[in-house]
Image (cartoon, one colour):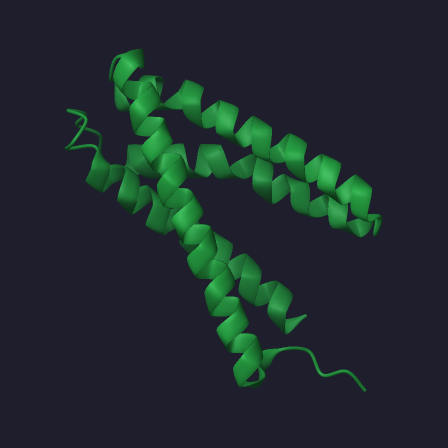
Length: 129
């Protein structure tokens, strides 16, 4: 339970960090969004991934993987279609901007997984009896 709550808190924090990275990268792509717009984009993109968490209630690996892949695909689709609209930039720049956001999101995911491994190894993981 502790690891589940920690992961959920980490994902919420990841949305805020991704929003900051979206805001920070906007200068490179000649966009002038506010932090609120960047947060809207990050939350808008992450929503399908949060909803996929319900699939874990059915503990069948292939089902979880299929639902996870569908959620991830829809999340990337929302990102690529939402960047030009929310950031008010042309679609040509929007594709590159969205690709940069995907890369930043993957780096954040690896950082979150690494921190959970570190926490697990120092004693915050489950104790099997």
